[in-house]
Every structure is written in C-alpha cells, then in structure tokens.
Amino acid sequence: MDLTTLRTFLAAAETGSFAGAARRVNASPSSVTERIKQLEHHVGARLFDRDKRGCRLTSAGRKFLAPATQAVRAIDIARHEVALPDRFTQSISFGAQYALWDDRLLEWLAQARVDHPETAWRVASGASARLNRDLAEGFLDIAALYDPVFRRDFGSEILFDDELILVTGGDPDRWRESYVRIEWRQEAGAEIASRLDITPQSGLILDLGARSADWLKSHAMAGFMPRRSVAKSLLDGSLKIVANAPAFPFPAYICWNRSLEPALLAQIVMSLKGAKLDRYPGKAGL
Image (cartoon, rainbow, N blue to C red; front, side, top):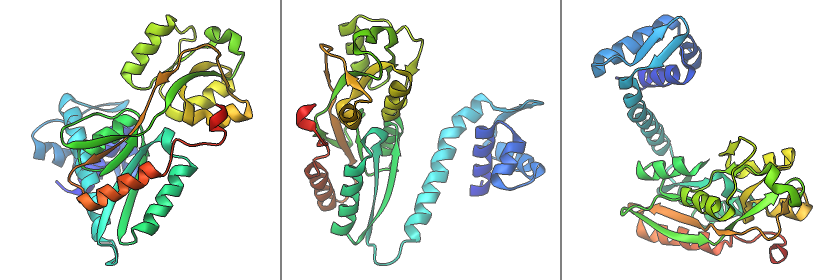
C-alpha cells in the first residue's frame, strides 16, 4: 500500500468514477483499476461497487476513507517538515474558522512570524467540525473557533466575547417573512428557536459560516450572525440590526493540543489574546 494508491482511492471516492480518478491522478483508467484491485486485496475487502454510472464506496470503503485521508495528510505534513530549511527549528500548525479570518488575524499572523523567526508555520481555514477533527488527530496545534469540542487532552480559553445578533438585508420590520436559519453551534440554535418561537418560512438552512451574510444581503433575508463578522456590513448599511430581537452570547475560543512546546504555546496564546481580535471599526456604535 503506497501513497499513489491511497491518492487514487481518494480520487475515485471523490469523483465517483475510475475515469474521473484517472484524470485527477494523471493515470490511465486501467492503472486506476489495477491500483484499486491491489488495494482491495491488501485490505481484504471490496471498497467500491461499480456500474455504468461510475463507482460508489461500499460499507468497507466508507470505513477506509477516514484512515486513508489521515495517512495521506500525515505523509504530506511529514514531507513539509523534512523539507524545511535548517534555520527553522520548530513548526506550528494553526487553523481558524472562516468567520475569524480577516485583516486583524492576518496582521497577527504576520507579526507572529516576525516574533518567532525560527518557527515555520502551516496555516489553514475551515469549518469548526474540520478544525476540531484536525486538533484531535494532531494535524493542528492551535485553532481559533466559535464551536470547540472540549477534550481533556486539549487546552482552551475564551479568545474574545462575541454575540449572535439578528440582522437582515431587507426590511427589518418584515424580517419574519424572510427569516432563514443559519447553523452555528447546536446549543445556540436550540436557544434561538425557543426564544423566537418561529419556524423559518424560507425552506432554507445555511451552513456557510461568515459567507451566510452575503446571502442575507443578496436576497434581502434575515438571520443570526456573529456581530464581529457583520460589523462592516452594519457600518455600510448593507445589513441592518432587527430592533428588539434578542442577542445570544457567542464567544470565540482558542484551543490547543497540549503536546505543543509549553513556552512557545504560552507566547502564541498570549499574543493571540493581545491582538484584540474582537475590535472592529465603529464597535462603540454597534
């Protein structure tokens, strides 16, 4: 079982066809077929069902998908580490939720690289589910996110306080007609539903993170967003706060894998908390 074979398996799983996998990994369809056949022999199970429409993962294939993905990512990370120039004596993998990546976090990252010239960085963005999983699997050292999974082997602190507020790109007085449920963390959704006593009329649920605000603006709809993520839209008037609607606490957290070198970890956490990521133009007026 080699890296090429694992990449071929993942390509077939993603594209849904051996022909699509062949294009993805730059191989012939017959080579893809042979690689999958060898892999199935190696693991002792059939991984795909095939027909004229393409291929679908079997139950065994679905079980194999996660460890195959982890193995490929682990090798890619190891290659990155080995290829680092000698001037880098340590490395950090850092991730943040999409809604938190803005100019302030980018400025913090630039300053952190200046403050730690001996440290190489691997930086990612993602949804909270992916960041939590990558922390658990050791692919991330530190993550900033709104919806952490608290574990005994993780450290965590509140990075800053935020809140979910009801905003609309349409008429604030008619927000109920255009209300859409936006997925944040589960307990926040349950509290919003119980406090508002409203059933969304749009037939739409958004799980787009900060990009949900673009939908609200483009389609004159209403929904709950973190105040920090829509601050600029409130200032320019493209979104408006719905008056008298409740707001819900929604703090952002920084979480870390305890295996990170303690002194470096303390410096990174302190610099992140000192970056005042909760600040934005016009905060006092919002």
